Length: 403
Image (cartoon, rainbow, N blue to C red; front, side, top):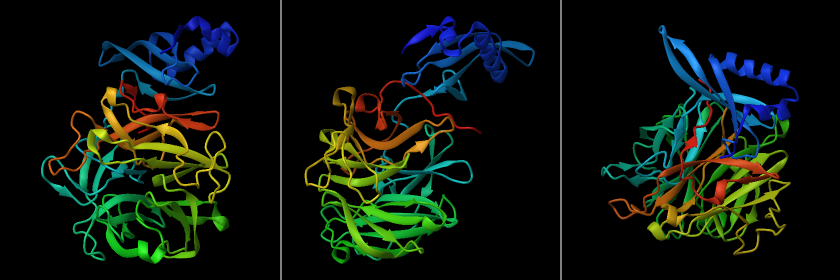
C-alpha cells in the first residue's frame, strides 16, 4: 500500500493554506482533536486517500480515534472507522449462485441456490441479510415447499429484483443434466419472503434453447422508454427476450448475445454502455473447479458484445476478457456466478460471488461447497477490474454504508 505524509498534500490542494483548511474539515467531521493526517492509497485505485488519527473525549475519558476518507477522483466521500476490515469468505458454509439487493428497510438481502448445508438442514433458496455486505445472518428459506410445475429438480440460481412494489424472483428449476429444465417466477411482498410461486415462464422445449436456466432480469431506459428483459442460458448460448408489462410473459423473439462458453449472464449498464459478465468452465468439481468469469461490452443491450481486443463473443468457445479466476495456491478455486454489482455510499462498486475453498471443497451430501465472497471493483479505462483478477485473500476495508 502506497503511503506518504501530509506534506505531499501541497501538491493535491495547491497551497499550505488549502492543506490546513482541508485538514480542519476532516478533523471537524470526524470529531477528532489534536489529530495528524496521513495519505495512503488504501483502496489501490491510484489516488491518495486520507487517514486522520487523534483523540476524542468519551464519558470524560480521552480515547484514540481514527477515520478513513476515500478519494474518488479528487472528491473525498464517505467515512469509516479505521480498522473496520473484512476477509473472505463473508458467509459460510455455502451460498452458491448469489443474487443480492438492497431493500427498503436498509438491509441487503442475498438469495442462493437450493442446497443442504453442513448442519444437515436442506434450504430451498436460503435468504441471508446484512447491513454492511460483510456480516451476514440467516433469515429463512424463500420457499416453504418447492414449486410443483415440474416433477423433479432443484431451485437454482435465483435472481431477485424489487419492481412494481414487490420482490420478483426468477429462478431455475432443473436436475443435473436435465433434458428440459425451465425458468419460473415467484413473488413476495417482503424481501424476507415467503415467495409465492407464479408458475413456469418457459422451459427449454418451449423456448428452443437447451439448458434454459440461470435467469437474469433487468430494465433499461426510463419512463415511457423503459424496457424489461430476461436473459438466461448455460453453455448452449446466452439469450435475451423482452418482457411484457406484467413481467411474466414476453413479446417478440428471443435474441442471442453470447456463445456456448458461458452461463450465469449478468449485464451492468454504466455510462451508456452495457457490460456483460458470464461464467465459464465447470462450477462444481470441488477443488478442481475451473470456473471463472469473462466480460465484454456493447453499446446496445442486444449486442454485439466485444472483449477488450474488439473480438465478439457470439462464436462458440469465445470467453471474453478474463475478469475473475481461481487462485488455488491461495486456497480458492472456481470463482463465479456473480450477483448484481452493488455500489456503496462512497460510490465504490463491489461484487459478490461464490468460490470453492480448496481445503474444504464438499458439503456432506457430496455437492461442491461454495461460500460467499466479496471483492471491490475498480474501473480502469472504462473496464471493471478486481485486483489480480483473483479472489481477495487479505484484509480489505469494509464498504461504506451510511446508517
